Image 1 (spheres, one colour):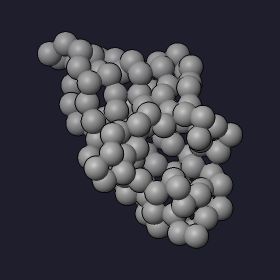
Image 2 (spheres, helix red, strand yellow):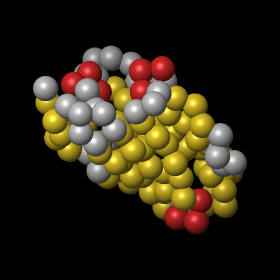
Image 3 (cartoon, one colour):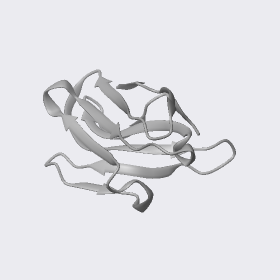
Length: 118
């Protein structure tokens, strides 16, 4: 199983970006999918998560600005980021708990850099 993230980039404060992350491989079911973010030398922190039935939770710092969603038919999770602030500048990683041919496991995407300029 592989997760491929896309959609990062440079945006001005107040702008928007949408991240996508598609899972591929032999996948029977994906439970929770999530986005984390990490600054150099810091721990990776949860931004938002979504279960297979659509329940979501968000970090307090992004509530009301970010929206996580998923397309189960495409095994893809999205993160719509609005009203971006310079403090949202991080590398963003997608994560998923996947039931595949070899059982269940957790997988990370390769990271997408988001830079918000002031």
